[in-house]
Image 1 (tube, rainbow, N blue to C red):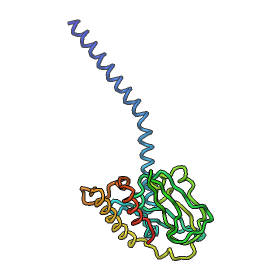
Image 2 (tube, one colour):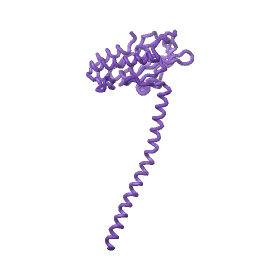
Image 3 (cartoon, rainbow, N blue to C red):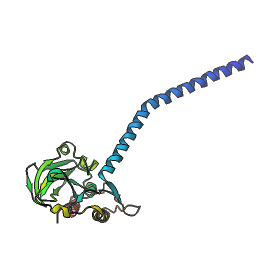
Image 4 (tube, one colour):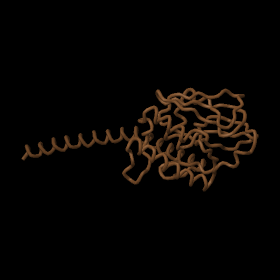
Length: 234
């Protein structure tokens, strides 16, 4: 009988030791992961608030900032105080330029005509020229892109902007915005999907939404055709 009691005592001590060790491990993991989870939650909340402030909505597989004006070559413009316009690239351009490695910006003080080159974007060994959506004087450039050009991909409607421009006229007010921009975006998304599917046979299985980043797979000749079709001023 004493042997049975001793066996039970040793067993309970062993099991109790395992339970204590497990609790210590759980506590240690909690101390480590709870701050991480809280930080992640704060970050996600900030991103959601930031997106709402920018008025970003989904158009198929693309994202559109509702308050901006959109040029045919997939640049956007926002009006600032003092008659200045901030210029960046929209989500269609973002999908095409998914492998950005370098951005060359026109110097401040340069006068540009609508359709002239205001930036050159390098994507590995391929490059394309970005056209000015309006005529005017480049007042300021986004220097952050020289150190980290991928801001264009991470936040195309915020930190990924390219220029501040002083326009020559208010012709930019004729550019698409609101529901007109949304309908055009949807059409351009289908057009881009069709181009990539035709050249790479990459139609999405769920009905034709964009698959990223297929544009990087195009040979140079087709890349040039793609960027000319979508990113040039006609």
